Image (cartoon, rainbow, N blue to C red; front, side):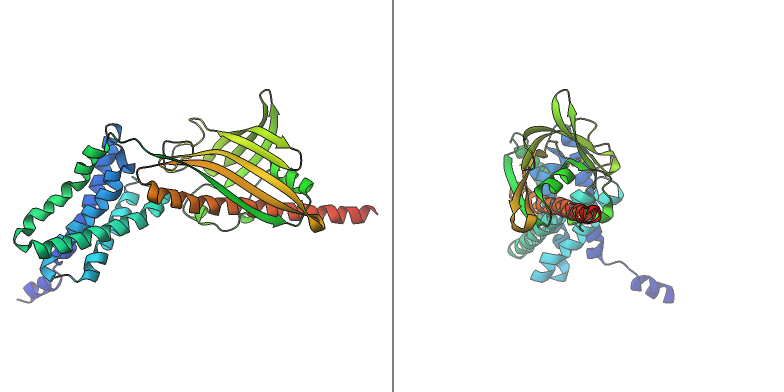
Length: 336
């Protein structure tokens, strides 16, 4: 008798099993869309990014229907399933940290939507609640209608500046010869915290085709920038060039790799404006492309991370230039 009571005490609630089931369903959908990426749009499709979290949220609340869930439960219980799903995708290495960070808010939002819609449907059609489990087919139905739709392109610009306590010439030299960049030199940024490799070196060299910017990041990332405009100590622009070796396997999530199907960096311009007191206004202007089925979400996310990254680069050149200017002032004093 005591053994039976102990078993009942530790019995897992049925709704919790369905929460786990919702998470497993989400991981299975990720695996399925990964396999179907050649015939459909894969994990970056509207079907997976929107349809799957809606289905996960709906199935989670359908499982908890016997508990008569409140609106708060309908909205937030699906979050447990989604978080377990994201952990599952990370453990199985189907997604990296960058994608998981970027997609988590979107998945949580639409999981809540799915949970609320299922809660409403259960109240309206309580006598036919079993048929509502067909929502599990929602991602596949969306995929069938979505496969012929082209990905929309958005071409965007980031423009940020900082005031540097150094002359334009000193700042210019730091930009052209940024060697041995150490992690401690880079300001804290969300971009690097979520797994984007840090820059290691950026050096301009003359080649038979003209001036080229050679950039290296952590994890073997490397690419080039062909200089298309240059005004000494004032402005320089380079257009990026990526190839199959720019991002070694595992260096970045394939869905956010620069120069890929969904995201590309076109060019960067550094503008240096002399300011009173021997200072310089350093401006970075970057142009990039975002192409996804969820540009309503991807565009502001890319803008946020892009500005975060540009702020980091501005901070690097500001600190290096000001140290160089200080060292130059000390050297001038010593020669007098």
